[in-house]
Amino acid sequence: MRHAAFASSFVSLAAVGLLAGCPDRSISEVLPEQGRVEAKDIPVNVNRDVDILFLIDDSQSMADKQANLAANFPKFINVLKTIQGGLPNVHIGVVTSDLGARGADGVTAGAVSGCANAGKAGNMQLFTAMPLVSGGPFLSDIQPIDPTVPRSRNYTGNLEDVFALMAKAGSTGCGFEQHLEAMKLALQPTNVVNQGFLRPDAFLAVIFIADEDDCSMEHTTLLTPDTSVLGAQQSFRCTKYGILCDSGGSSTAAMEVLGLKTKCHPNDASAYLTKVSGYVDFLKGLKSDPRKVIVAGIMGKTDPFRVEKRAPPNDPNTLFTALAHSCSYTGANGVEVADPAIRLKFFLDQFPNRSTFAQICQQDLSSGLQQIGDLLKTVIGNPCIEGKLADVDPVAPGPQYDCAVSSVTDPGTALQQETLMPPCNATATNTPCWHLVPDMLDATTGEYKQCPNSDHLMLTIEGKDALPTDTHVIANCVTEVTNN
Image (cartoon, rainbow, N blue to C red; front, top):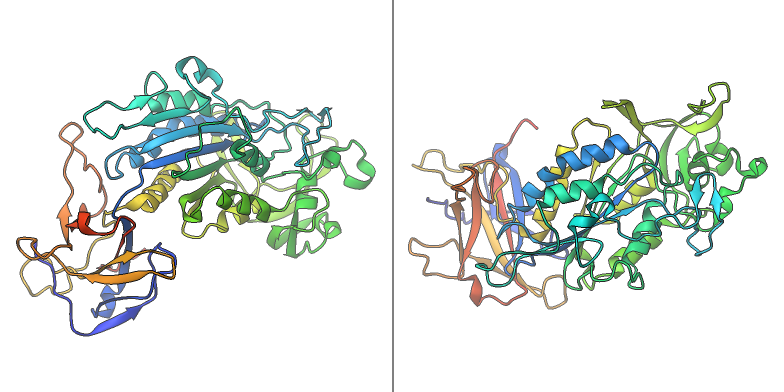
């Protein structure tokens, strides 16, 4: 396959790669209608260790959504299997949002409003998968250094089937869901139940599956039965004291006013709920390089955000103030709903280039799970060209592609250096160099092994063993303009 030579005239591009701190890139000047660029950030030495924590809402309304997650989990795993070398070395754990009547200060209020003591306390759960798993409350699936040795697994059966049993976490958990605090308790180094899950040098992915927003409490006074101050002992307390909206809800009192509200965000001055930023700092602090942290959510969309009067299912004659659902769909047992996840979405947004969001109101969660898998694949290092490359010289025979490729050492530091890498010559003797090669088909499945999209091309580096171990390869390739 031939590639277009770089033109002598270059246009400047903003740094669009995932690698933080990289300088601006340059790429050959092309026709304006071919002006899209696909950026790649590929470490020369791929870290294949990934610890994946699923934080699953186990409140009363989640049974259908958990079944949806379990049924579509194979789509997530199928994406991970297309990572270089196949399925990464994974630890997979499940924690629920049920912390009972426990506050972030560690004090519990006994049994309050269906929330018992400390709930599941951030401890990983196997649920009905327990008989199939040994050596810890999480799944471990590791490929030894010798590729001819079978993978080391702490479970029996298929990964997808075992996880499906773990994903069905039940729907009896506390209705005041403390997603973020449960995550923190699960990953605390002092949590002896979950020890061994976190590996120091592994990527860490936290995935939230929820139909209500986070209600992590500073203390349990939020659950007090006294309704004279806090209002009905319902989860709207989480909204009233945990969220502010610049339009229509700029104070706690204004949050109770019925109607549409916009520009909503966490209330960092709340007297009852924790600060979301504290969980951001905690999670990033678990790694020496915060870019090793990936977060994702399949949750209720953040708008419309509206306060209404609603009757509980068991008492149609009593109206109470409630947060209106932001989406709905028809599930196996009827209409399923979800509420705006303002605090959780804000949390995700604090991890630029390392987060993704999909809404939970859909009969098939496969696209959301594939989206999360694609993010992990990209962060670990995805050599596949996902878009359709532009032929920058249609008159010349064969496709003429245009890519600018560099090697970057000491990335993100004051010592960072970038060196332009040439395309490989006909015999690839000018190493280190790059070229685009077609992906291979799997003889068993008939599917492409790593690059199922577009033209099934991957960026390959020849002579990469001569590069420093921390080198990242940064590439910008011109792709065709689409109608999307």
